[in-house]
Length: 127
Image 1: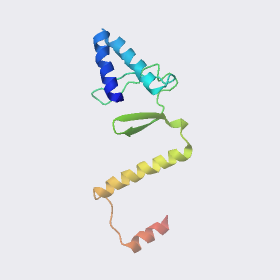
Image 2 (image 1 turned 120 degrees about the vertical axis):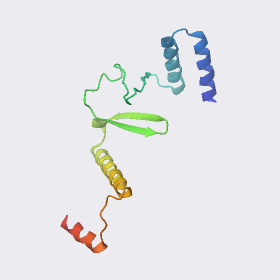
Image 3 (image 1 turned 30 degrees about the vertical axis):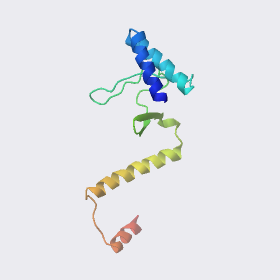
Image 4 (image 1 turned 180 degrees about the horizontal axis):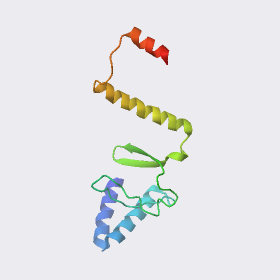
């Protein structure tokens, strides 16, 4: 129902507002209204042919060049989170998950050496 309402509103905006800027401003206003988030900052951007995304200046004013961001992709949405604000334990868990995923890909490609259980345990004891 909300999607239909948004679509009808977008059709109305395209007829009523002449410039793209006015339409975008009205759309952002309506999204804030629907989400009940007056403190949320919203902006529009595009993905370049190289896959780069420009974060508008007013949204990145408290970020520094080279700062690490965590990107979480969930179906058709992406969430950016400042990595330095993350809990240290969470960072370690994330690093372990990434390393595990890399190892799984190597295993699937057949890049692991096969060993007997005895050889594996002997090597494990060396650690």
